[in-house]
Length: 344
Image (cartoon, rainbow, N blue to C red):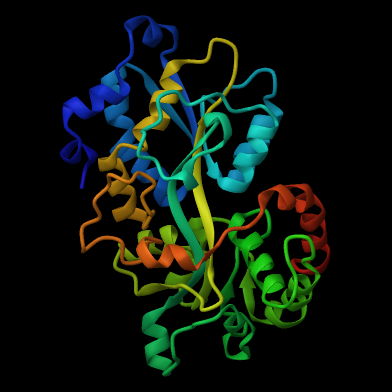
């Protein structure tokens, strides 16, 4: 379903048209965000309408959140990126490092969970980190669907599990949940490292950060169980592949997809406009349909046929939200430990 069919010309114009002088200042807008199916939707259903409404060319720079943050750090003082779309953890770091400008004119009916201090960023979609499994293979083998993070330790999945690495939010969430379930917390993840090293590692086929490679490993039949986000699983299931998403009984983990305009001299107002377009209720429905993103705007009415995997309604009460103020201080240390003990 094309965005052209969903958005009226009036709604796009209200969100994106700026004075001609602003458009004249900058003919190219650089948007850095996720790759894979997210990039495809941005290119197919969001960017063309924005370009047409504003007379601007949007260049999309694909990469995971830590890649985008690394680019911002490398370009400090000479930022090439205009808009960053990243996970909530790296976004807190980006704000702390002074990379994000203010988003002006955010909608009044935005959920509190999507707001950041001083409007230096905004959540554009709510995701849950949990488990993905191949429903066809499980049925053929007579296996019950997974229900717990502890299923990652089950030896019947030897070399059939895929977990993203710790520099990816899904891998980090895995470490945190295994620690939390065994007496740990963000301040003490030793138990999580021990379980990953001793009990989960024998089952891991690959610690894979690429969404494309993740789907390939499932399509080839090499992988049958993975840690992934509801948004990614929804997108994969939309292709017709037999996968489903599980909210583990110990809880799924909150992952907020966020966006911010990059602070720099003569920053284009178009950057803030692009961010706000992602909050338009009709775009929110596109992201719900394509990715299972839980809407962050209260006025979004979710049709019954959508949101099968999304963290909406009662599911949101069962989400665990990590403390990023602690995590971001420890992340570099944990990454080194992960490379030393887990992914060797």
